[in-house]
Amino acid sequence: MRGVLGAFRELDAAVNAIEALKKAKLGAIQVFTPTPRHELEHALEPGPSPVRKYTLIGGLCGVTFGYWIAIWTSDYWPLVVGGKPIASWVPYTIFGFEVMVLIGALSTVAGLFINARVPRLTMMVGYDPRFSHGDYGVWVECPPEKARNAEELLREHGAVEVRLER
Image (cartoon, rainbow, N blue to C red; front, side, top):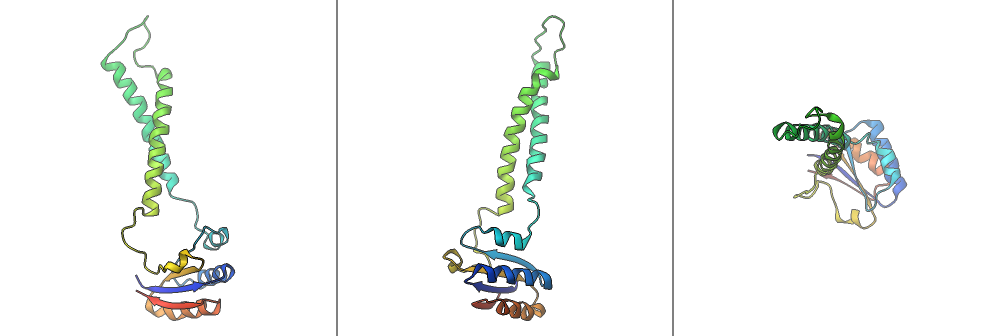
């Protein structure tokens, strides 16, 4: 993965650089910041989180499994009471709901870890320890022929340091 890394001391300069890089369409942009900042999030415009799909699929699988296991248990060990049907969906709704919540929550956590790439066993390309102490880093993944343009844009918007990373 090749790209250009720019280090910024000021938040506004980093936000302006991100907007200029997005306008120039040089490549994928990643930001390193000591604390979450909504200004950076608005500049990146990340879109909706894919974790919600894990929640939906997990919830649907959970409610299906909850109904299935309750009906299977009733059919396997029938308890005939007054001519009522052995497998009725009404009493199993509570169990189906509970399993839906359980599997939906567990799949949400799994989706969060998968999309956040946790645990990360190797250090990120472009990461610098000073980005945890107050500076902001903007990493632009771009081919070598666009690296010069990215360097110029980062310097133009106030980067303290700009370097090519590999």
